[in-house]
Image: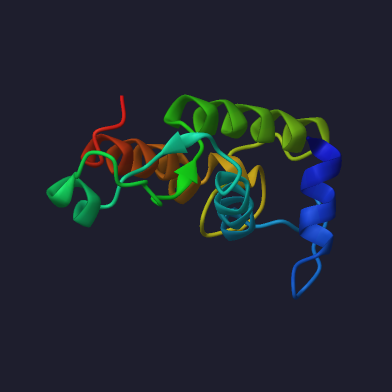
Length: 119
């Protein structure tokens, strides 16, 4: 996964590395990874109509547990690359995965999946 993260960071409009990645880059990576999931997250329109026999075209996303696991792996990748300290917002250095916005991301994913009745 480290190689995939490095390739992703290098492909950004402003290329980054593990040494220069920000919390926003980590969230962008998680959103990008989210498109390859297997969990159907139904939108509110689908939940209200819910017709039997009609194919569902709602997006497939990563399950909450998978997102949480990815964040743990990302934290480890940055720690192994000398970015193992907490992320103080006022300094903008350290492990970007420990930033509050990245920590909030799995809770947002879980809430979205609960709203769409994914268990």
